[in-house]
Length: 200
Image 1 (cartoon, one colour):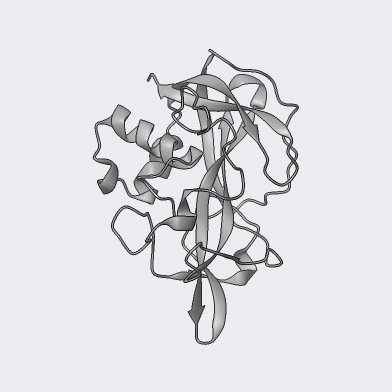
Image 2: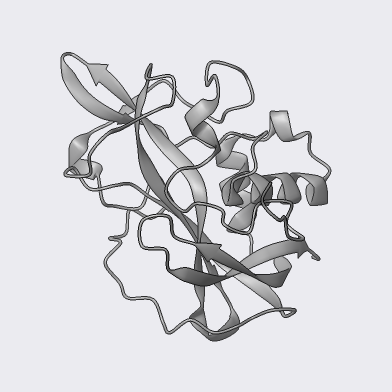
């Protein structure tokens, strides 16, 4: 059994594979939508300011124990050439979606794994579904949404994606804890500045 840290997830949490791979996404605990997203929109920020995702992040700094302001939150769709992955049961295909928070401290950014966009076929064309996160899971994004729901006194199963993104973009303050995460593809250990709790 893997050792767990204060985030309640294994210290070798995967960056690519996450808690969606073995769950039934037809239930009510997954943020989802029915409409597809045109391939021409891939690679741009999802439903926020439609900004490109090509800017370079600043050098990573250790923010452990610091209280920061979340300046903005973005969902960035995968490029068209990103291959589709299959869920463990083989019934659905998806692409990972980048969920990124920008902090007030030195312009630091952090990516939270856990969002996916499931394949939808509309008029014979493959399209990205609305980004989803499994609210009952243990991915970095799942735990983050759980913390913001608890802080705001909202039932996690009643928290919509639109509502959550609005909260993240209202400049809340949060305490950071640094967590070591191993990339399963490269075995590189990344020191991630993840939100431990919201304070204001």
